[in-house]
Image 1 (cartoon, rainbow, N blue to C red):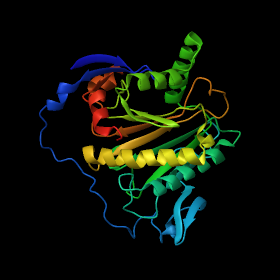
Image 2 (tube, rainbow, N blue to C red):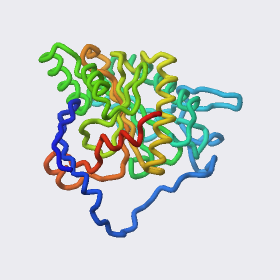
Image 3 (spheres, rainbow, N blue to C red):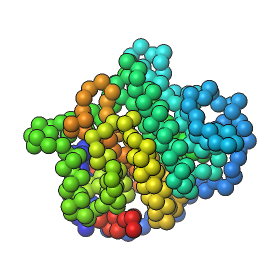
Length: 316
C-alpha cells in the first residue's frame, strides 16, 4: 500500500507504506521495560509509605486505607513560577498508590479517580491570571520519556500557548472561517458516517484511528461537545473511564506492555476557541522512532493501516 494522506487536524503530511512492516531488523539488544510485578518499591518516592521523599500534596482522593491518587509539585519542573519570561506550575499526578498499577490493568473505578484528579488540577491551574495554557500529558516507560515506573501523569501550566496547539488552533480557525462550521464537528460527523475508522461512538466521545497521523498506531479520542476540559461532568468521567479500561485492554492484547504517550489537547485559558476547537486526546504507542526522512522533511511515514487497526480495536 502506497498512499499520501493529510491529517485534517494538523495538516501533517503522512505517507502510508504498510509493506515496510516486512523490513528485516537486526538483533541489536534494546533496553526493555519489563512488566512491573511488585506492588511496593522501597526506593520509589511515589509509593504509599514513602511520602517523606515526595513534595507536598496539592490534591488527593482517599479510600478506606488512605490516598488512592494524588497530585504533588514536580521536584524537577520544566518551568516554574520564579522565571520572568516563562512562568508556570509543574505537577506530578500520581495515578495509583500501587507501584505495579498501569493503564493496562486499571479498572473503571481507578480510571475515574484518575480523571477526577486530572479535571480538578486543570481547573485549579487554569485560574491563574498569568497562565495561557494548561498541558496534561503522560509518559509510560522509559522509551516514552518516563523516568519512574510508578504510574503517573504530569500537568503543566504555562504563560504561553505551545506551538503544536497554536498550529491546531490555526488550522481549525481557518476551516471555520472558510466553511462556517467546526472542523471537529464535521470530522466527527464524517467519521461516524463512513464508519471505517470508528473504534467507539458514545454519548460524549468518539474514538477513532486517525485518517492520517505522524505516529503509527495512534488512537484519538475526540470530545463531541464543545466543552472545556474542566467542564467534564461526572457522567462524562464515567464514560471516558469505561473507554480507557476497554481500550487499553485491547491495546495490551495487540502490543503487549508497550510504551506510550498520552497528550490531552485542551482550550487555551484566555481566548475563546470553543466555537471551532474541541478537546481531544492523542494516545501514541512508542513502537517506532522517527527517522532521518521524517526529521529532515517534516513529512511522516506510517507503516500501519488505520482501517485495519480499527478492526482490531473496535468495541463490541
